[in-house]
Structure formats: structure tokens, C-alpha cells
Length: 240
Ligand code: 16G
Image (cartoon, rainbow, N blue to C red; front, side, top):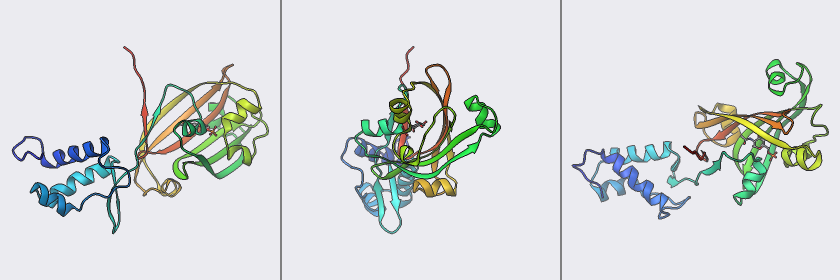
């Protein structure tokens, strides 16, 4: 399997081999990997080389290390298609996960210039600031901060935002959410984000900013989210 005289670096060959085992299901999420020494002996390569391959796989989110316990196959990433405009609750249900939220902040604040601009409202107009940790089967996936005009979306409560904001807007208020634009960029978690998402400070994250509009074009929310890069991937279909 490992070709020593190949121009392809040995660590990379091992990395691809382990990836293949994960992708074809021979190694499953939660499985522990053999010790570095075992790989080194089996393939007659140095432990340094094995470590390099495993570290690379940890960095790419295929594996994770637990201090004192070893290296394990990571949970599969959630693949989110970007075509449809869906809520977190809908996304999780569609994948068979139990959606959950932990409410960190729920307040009405005067809109700053930036928020007012995003929501097309007056500066200082009342907006809900809602910060939630979003969970799938009780595992934190994202830290989300929504800004919603309190004059437009009336009657939000902690109870409602503990469930689904979109279903309140559509099901209860009868408004129709129609379009959104989204910007995605990569970053690394600061201490607060890391604590909220149960990851290490400095872990890769994706920052997502979403502006969502009702069918008449009125901005209905401005959202800043931090997603775990080890658990999420986004897919977009393209047509030439
Ligand atoms: C998603 C949306 C967020 C929206 C939320 C509503 C992204 C990046 N964000 O998380 O903008 O506020 O769903 O979810 O996809 P809810 O209806 O479950 O409260």
C-alpha cells in the first residue's frame, strides 16, 4: 500500500489511505486508531511520518485526539446545501438530528448604525438581540446572534426563540420569508466562541453573515453566526 520509491510523500500516502478507510466506512466515527507505533511497524516507516499523517488528518477534521486516550475518527460533517433558504430547526430535522438551543442573550437594544443599516431601520430603533448556541442532538454546532426589528416582529419571547424564530415569523405572524444573502468566511475561534462551541481556542470556524428578507423586500433579520468548521461543510450546485 505504501510505495517507498514513489514521488508522493509517504506521510501523504498514509493520510490518503486512512481517509479512504474512513470514507468507505471501514473506520467509523468514534473508532480509535491504532497507535503510531503500530502503523510505523506495519508499514516500516518512521513514527514521525505517521505522526505527520495523523496530524494532517486532525487538522482536516477527519480525526480528533483526546489527551491520554488516543486518536479517534471524528463525527462526519454536516453537509448543508446552500440552495434552499432554511432555518436551523428545519436543517436539523431534515437530517434526523434533534434541534436544540441554549439561549445566551435575549434583549431589546437600540440599533447601532451598522445594525440599523442592515435592517433598513432608524438608528436607535428597538431591535431584539438574540444570542443562541444551536445544537444537534445536544452537541453545539453554531453560535448565532440575530438582530430583528422589534417593530416588525412583535411579541418574540424567550420561549419562542428557544424553539424556531422562522416558524414564529411564518406560522404565527403569517409573514413570508423569501430571500437571503449569505457571506461565509473562515476564521479561528476566540476564547468565548471556543467555550460556547466546546472546541479549543484557535480551532477553525466559519463566520456566516445572513441578511434575510420578506417577500415584499423588507429586511427581517441580520444574523452573525460562528459555525464549527470540523462539523460543517457547505455545498452549492453550479450550472454552466
Ligand atoms: C439559521 C440561519 C439564521 C436563522 C435561523 C433560524 C444560517 C447561517 N442562519 O441558523 O439566519 O435565524 O436559522 O432558525 O443558516 P430557527 O427558526 O430554528 O430559530
